[in-house]
Figure 1 (cartoon, helix red, strand yellow):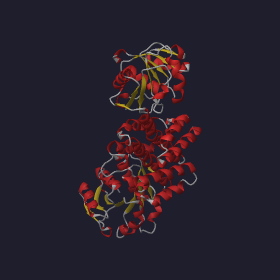
Figure 2 (cartoon, rainbow over the protein chains, first blue to last red):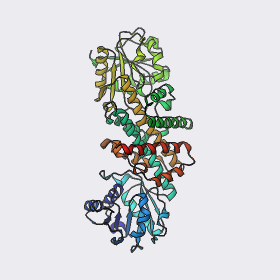
Figure 3 (tube, helix red, strand yellow):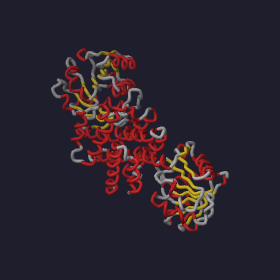
Figure 4 (cartoon, rainbow over the protein chains, first blue to last red):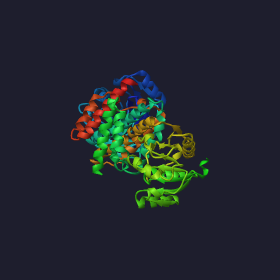
Length: 263
Length: 263
């Protein structure tokens, strides 16, 4: 089956669903319908795509591929309803932490996962071309359809089983969610003095530019990497009134010091 | 005094000294001499700048400005030796965590700090133009010289006293050193499966691109931000053999959850 004319139904209308659907449409796939629990979300995304929408998961249009982009905890309950009447189609979900076993007992034979390793915001449409896309599948037919779709979306398509994908998701929580939280905490420290967050941006940008060129373990700088106990003690006393930040400071400082011994 | 013809001696030849000296030379200042404790470092940086070098801090050349770019803990012991015979010059250091009081008893009247909020690597020469430069000074003359030099180096010059500068340095440890450590840990998780670190780069890039556009507290995504206990429990079990990473996971997850209540 060529994906040129592949018809797709998107289930979900959140950050990932929006970005994925827009990228699929741009890649020449036929987005036939959007389902969302809420009418306004379904209508919004369908409007962007110029396709039909519904809030009734038991009355989905026929399509070759159904892409389930809902929150991890909603996938298991949604699948059996969505599959009913479309058992011959290919179904996939897009969640890092949900294993293939979620499809068991749903009545679908050709199924799999398309996991894009990226952080998505509805209002920021990102270029899928460079996003690593990890594919898993239950059958040769699912493999063919999902790999074909993945290659139309991205230049970086890899296979990953459920266990590896879970680890990829965990790694992305460290690299993305946790580092973003550190930015927020750094901003909070400065906000108390009326200093805007954006004074940190050149530093943040350079930190990232470095790890494009050298491995992060080698790029490590700062008082913990130097073992500078004086500065570390000064920081501890600055944080003495901020229990949560002090705890993070201790844990991360120890981790950097432990890391020094390994590299 | 115009900085057009300002003569400068640089003390230190490390990551910051190298970047600052190159930027000062490019800004038209006359770098007259480099001092470093080790001959090879002094000769290397002097070679880049085409100036003299020495390893004898008691025999520095005469200059209008002496810039002390050595490790925080070395500043206090180096200063009295460097000042001797050059008491009429302006002295500054470049350290985030070292207060102005370090100059007390050194015999110099016109002194201050030029603190660039950036992470420096000797092998990566960065553009100083966008780096926030924080200035502190002991006298109108020091203010005039240091502000003039700062404005020649950067478009983002601000004043900050020692207390605020210490806080800026602490914020930069969170935003830069700690986030880099998270990248290293994420890479470690993937290395165990033979997955290269660079699959994380699009995610890391987008995380940073987001905080250029929206405040990090609003940009927060991931299982902790969604309160997704299922995914968090899966991550905990994946990390059950990695005590240090599990600890970081718990602390950062709690911090993100606490942050949700505030925004």
